[in-house]
Structures are given as structure tokens and as C-alpha cells.
Amino acid sequence: MDFNPGAVLAPVVDWLNANFHGFFAIITRIIETVLGSIESALLVLPAFAVIAIVVVAGFFAAGLRVAILAGFCLGFCWLAGLWEASMQTIALVVVAVAIAVAVAFPLGILAARRARVEAALRPVLDVMQTVPPWVYLIPAVMIFSLGRVPAIIATIVYGIPPMLRLTTLAFRGVPNDLKELGQAIGAKPRTILWKIELPAALPTLLVGLNQCILLSLAMVVLAGLVGAGGLGAEVTRGLTRMEMGLGLRAGLAIVAVAILVDRLTRGTLERKSRAA
Amino acid sequence: MESNEVLIDCQSVWKVFGERSKEAIRSITERGLTKREILKEYNCVVGVADATLQVRRGEIFCIMGLSGSGKSTLIRLLNRLIEPSLGTVRVKGRDLSTLDAAALRETRARHIGMVFQSVALLPQRTVLENAAFGLEVQGIPRDERNRAAETALAKVGLSDWKLRYPRELSGGMQQRVGLARALTADPEIILMDEPFSALDPLIRRQLQDEFRQLTKDLGKSAVFITHDLDEAIRIGDRIAIMKDGVIIQEGTAEEIVMNPADQYVADFVAGISRLHLVKAHSVMMPLDQWCRQSPGLSPDSLPRCSPEADIDALIGKITGTGSDAIAIGHGGTTVGVVTTRSLLLGVRGESDNRAAA
Image (cartoon, rainbow over all chains, first blue to last red; front, side, top):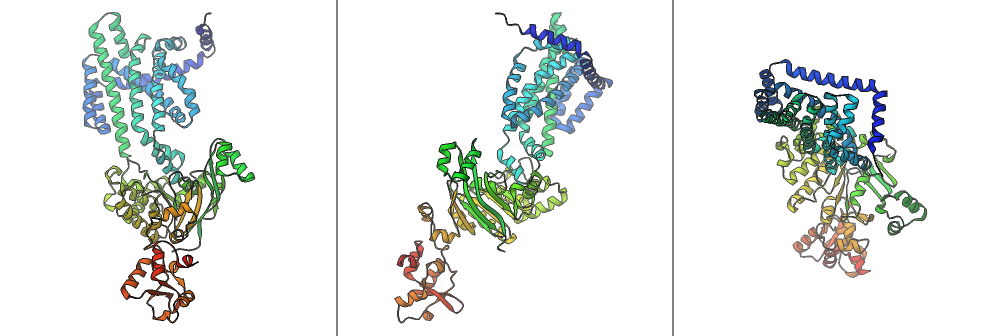
């Protein structure tokens, strides 16, 4: 017997495409606009000015060590001649991670509170993490056509599971007596969430964010395949032309961007929580 | 400060845990099933069974029980951290079960403080911020809540530590912060859930004395959970002893030591020193009985003590004066006599009239 889910799914995608084209066009427009404005904001100033700003901001937000590291990472991207591609990638990753966190964080908290939600989410997350991203890139490209939008959607899909799982783990791990304290002093549920649970969950949440960022960056290469530009495109170009040097430079630039984004967010959040 | 105003009134409260707890409760009310039958028929665990207690203003009420006796469940019923399955809990005359979420929060924030065995300090906040946390969640402005927190920290002797973080403090100091946090909101009632159990014995004693002193000075009422009878006796004005979810005896330390309700309590109190616990009125024999036993002697010739004098003081009096009996009375009236024999019986925890009878 032949089992062919594609035969079922393909007409669905076609139907979506035919009937909801306007809706998807709007999504495409929104994502393109946000991405484009972040990108142009990053590219409007000369590279050295952006590096200087990031270093100074990093110093105040996360400390000297992070600032120096940020300077190195960005400096490498610039000197490797990949400045524009790096900025495109950063814009892509920042938007993807922001959306992934916005989806995963509330769902993760819900899953931590209700076992049934978690049971329902678990297989979905498994599928999201194990199906090779190329596979769900196909319908994404069919619906949103080539470009940055299917790339960012693939990245979001890939970034959600680690964030969600670790959010659930983090909130499960909040000591029960702290929650009880919140109730006993008459705190509102929202106050308990923000002032007691979130600080206690933060270390694990930061691991989740870190995984989300790194996995998203790993997806960036794929984004090059569907024409999203950025460092992924450079890697793809290096691969198709068998240019070792270009591929390696672009690969290292992806590493630099990963370290930069991770350390900056982590340093900022950690300091903020300590100050609060 | 003690008065007769009842702050916490807990009437026949039950807590049944388990999936079929509703049915179990119905059969308790309708058929009067026992704990064991409930477990067998409904596979439900009875945490607290038919607990009735009253805590009056200015009083420290101890609930003593071993682990699994339901004491931690019972204390959580008093501020509705756990919903009772049956029965009513009134705090300052208001039935907690009738309060909506906001009113319940308000009651907890203003009237009932709580101190936990694990202390439950927030690690990322300083001592001062921890102490002020209760007021912070009530939305009190920073200056005002910090002032209140500083006052409370001063009361527990931690003024110099307010800018430190909890991890920099010893266990005893952390528990003081926990107490200060409860005091900052100035509640009338403080629920203490085994607060000193994790501390080493010396610190524990010191904190017990400080806690009692502070509570009395401030005129607070407290419900104090402990698994240590010594602690209950040191701290409590009245003590309830719990076993398997049931309060098996309630009374002053002296009443419990002198008249244990059953063998379980008797075993517990066996090792307790009576010296400072048992008072003259519990060991003395009635005056007429003494007169019959010792014809020709007048109680007026004996050295005198008040009925509130403890055994230690009576021994001091007997060894100091050389007399082998002491007249007990207030002012001019003599109500009874303590002899050497009744004193010795008292040390063992028996009273003379009982031994004679």
C-alpha cells in the first residue's frame, strides 16, 4: 500500500495559495518591511561607526568583556569583506529570534502549568526539530515565494522548540516555596510571574535563548538556498563555485555573528536581572 | 496583651487529597467514615481530619506533630494556600472561603504573614529588598516600604546587613530575614511553618527565645508549626498535638505534660524536663488533705510560694529553708501544700492527688 501524505498536503497548499493569497501577501509585506528597515538601519552608517556604537552600547549594557568581544566579531565581519551580508544576516536572525521567543515563551509557560498542553505540544515540537528544514521549506516557498520570508519562517520554526522546551523546564524548576511565598504575601499571579518566577527561571531561559539564537544562525545557510541573501548566500556561493576561501570566510562570519548576538543578549539580560 | 478576641477560628476542618475527594467528603458528612475507610474505599488521603482550633489575639499557638501528621497542611488551610474540603476557617471573623481572589490577597497581605522552613528568600534581591517584598507587591512606594523594612530588620538585629544578598548570610540570619519580611507588612497573625527546624540547636534556641520575646513585645499572634516538643513548650502559650491528621490533644504545655491524652502523647512528654514547666498548683495537695495527714501542724508556719512557682523554685525553697513542705497561696489565703513527696512526683510528671487517688 502506498502512503503518500504529499498527495493530501499539496492540494491544501494549492488551495491556501489560491484563496489566501492576499493574506500571505500581507504577511510577506510586513516581514519584508521590518527586515528591510532593520537592515537599512544597520547599513546607513559606515561600518566603523556601527562597530563603535555597538561596542559602546555593549559596554554599558553588558560590560567591558562583552564590548571587546563584540568589537572583535564585528571587526572580523568587516575586514572579511562581508559587512553587508553580515548585517542582512543579523537582521534576519534578530527578527526570527524575536518572533520565535514571542511564540515560544508564553506557550512554554502554559506548558509548564498544564500537563495537557505539554503533552499536546511535545510531538509537534519533535516534528519541528527532526523534519529536515528543507522539507518544510518547500511549502513555505510555494506560499511565500522565494526570498527572505520563507527563510525566516523556516528559521522561526527551527528556533521555537528549544526555546519552548527550555521555557517549560525553567518554569517547572522554580522552587515551589517561592511560588507559595508569593501567594502567602498576597501577590497577584502576574506579580508572582514577573517578580518571583521569571528571575528564578532566568538562567535556564538564557540557555533557551542561546539555543534559539544558535540554531537560527545554523538555519541561515539554508536561507541562502532560497535567495534570502546574507551570509548564507555567500556560503552557498562558495559551495557552488567550489571557492574554499569564500565559504570559510562566510562560515567564520556566521560564527562571529552568533557569538556577538548571544553574548550581547545574555550579558544584557543577566545584568538587568541583577540590577532589578 | 492576651485577650479573648479570636483571630483565627477553625471549625471542623477537613482536607482530603485525591481524585475522588469530593465523593469521599460526601461520605464523611453522610456516613461518618474514618480515615482508614476513606483510604480503602476512595483511595483518598485524609490530610487533616476534623480540626478545630482557635487562636486568640496575642497568643502563640503551637502545632506539634511528626512529619506526615498533617501540620503543614493545617497551617496552609489557615491562609487558604490549600482549600479546605470541609469546614470553615474564619480570620478576624471573616470566612475565608467566601472571599474572592482579590479579598483573599488583601487578607493575606495585611493580616496573615508567613515564614517558611526553607526561608524562601529571593536570591537576586538584597536583604532589604527581600524584607520589603511584601509591601512591594502591594504597590507601596519604595521609600515607605524600605522604611518599614528597615524597622523590621532592626527588630531582628540585622540592620547592618540590609545591603547584603541572602547567600552571604548564615542560615539563622536568613531565617531572621524571613521573619522580618513577615513583620514588615505588620500583620496581626504570623504563620510559622517549621521556621527553625533546619537550624543547628544553639541558634535554634536563641531564635526561639527571640521570636517569643518579639512576638509578645509586638502583640502579634502566631501559629507555630514544629516537630519538636521542646520547641513547642519553649515557645507556645498553647500547644496542639497532631497525629495522622487529627489533633489529639490541645492545652498548655503544663496540661499536656501533666495529663497526656493518650499513650502517644505520654511517650512524647516522657523525656521533657518538668523543672520549669510544672507549676505549684499542679503538684500541690489540697489544704484539707494535708491537714488530715499532718495533724497538729499549721500551714502558717511553712514557707510560702505562689501557685505559679515552678518546680525548680519549689526545690530551691525546700532546700534553702530546710522545711519539708511549702504552703501555696496568693496573698494571705493558703490553697494547698507541696510536700517533698508531691514535689518528687511532680518531677516525674504526676500530681499528688492523682497518685493518692
